[in-house]
Image (cartoon, rainbow, N blue to C red; front, top):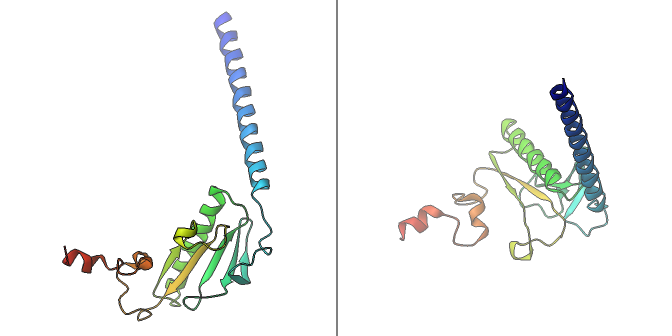
Amino acid sequence: MIKTIGLFIANFLLDKLIVAGWNRLKKGLQERQMDNTTDLEDFNAPWSEKVSEDFHVVVYKDKYPVTEGHLLFVPKYNTAEIIDDAFYSAYLEGVELVRSGKADGFNIGFNYGEAAGQTIMYPHIHLIPRRKGDVEDPVGGVRNVIPGKGNYRKSKETL
C-alpha cells in the first residue's frame, strides 16, 4: 500500500514537472517569436508584389528576378522553425511549377551574411524557376555561385 501511494505521488510530481517544463518552453518560444517579429514592409527589400500569405510565411515576387517567376519566401518570425516552414513552402511551390509544366526545374537559395551576398539582413528564401536553355551549362546548379567552380565535372577532369 505504501509502495502504491509512493508511486502515485512520484507520478503526480513527474506530471507536474513535465507540464511546468512544457509551459516554460511554450512561454519562451512565444517571447522569442515576439522579439523576432518584424514589419516586413519596413525594409528597403528586394520583394515587391505579395503573391500569397499564410500563418508563418509571406510570398513575394522578387523585384529583381533572375528568371521569370522568381519568388521570395519571407518568414514572419525570425526563428529556425519558421524559416524551415519557408524552405518547405518554397520546395512545394517549386515542385508544383515543375509538375504543372511552368518550369523544368528550380533552385532554392538562402544568403546568410555579407560574404554570401546577403544585402537585406532578414531571412528570406529564393525560389528560382529554371528552364532548359536558360544557361549554357547548368551542371553544378547552386555551385555556380562561385565563378568557375560550378561544373565539378570539368574540375575533376583537370585533376
